[in-house]
Length: 406
Figure 1: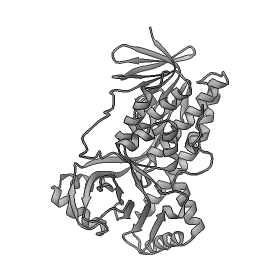
Figure 2: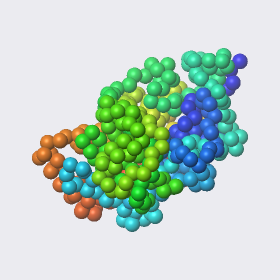
Figure 3: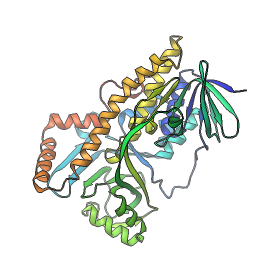
């Protein structure tokens, strides 16, 4: 006998947990399925390599869900400035929170911190159930429901299934939804480093020949790096000794944070441009990386996913309040129209920027630098880019604007 819920969310990372949390706050009976329960406590060192730059819009979502205090308790790091420059030219951009109405541009947060805080809230909500371990083996439609069968034989059914199971989404494949995309033949090399100079609560990004190198400030004074390299170079850098790697990193940084003193465990993630050809199927919808995967150079992947979560929750809660079917094609099409265009625009922007800085022709470098400097010295244009990067744009879900949707 299948366990019955109104909505099932598959994938308990930050995007899936945020969607489940919002739905449960709105009185929707929701089950969150994941392969394992996340850790809630860990030693202060080492810092997790998986770090996200959360925008003001994402902060609003997490505050409305009640997760933000738990995140602050575990540790978040505000960044107040962002400095971007071209290593092969004289182009430079500087974004400062002093030019905004806020005391910071955003926050750097370990992904595990966000996930743990969301699960803390979920477990207090009477209409939410977290099911672990749970690995979906099959999915089918049965009358007005989707039925999920787990590897251990248990089954669950709901009016709507939300897939938040990542870039290699198994549920997306089960639904027969194809993806479009290409490999960048680049890896994002991530690590935590200790530097001679303070990070000054600043996010630093230097565009190099193979891709950008970013230093992201952490609460303990260290920096999280995301270094985009060709796959071949990234693998070679993983094989270096710590001292050899620190020397290569210091040279690549241009000395902006002084000497590189120490490095924690390193990892490299293959980068890909990918989007689902459609976000929905009958009583089924994709959110987060299951729907789209973009280049990390502006750190917008997690923020786009949280907006997806807020949008689908708003749609479903609205349908429940109006006593309409929660998994209706009308509801799901509205969600897809709302989020797909915004996501594709962000993905395309990241793709264009990545390719623009990959061009090494001297005239193009001069043109690129002139464009950066023009933006940096044109207050209105710079304010627009700043506002957009902070996630404060039009047509945001209610949660992202700091309002409840229930």
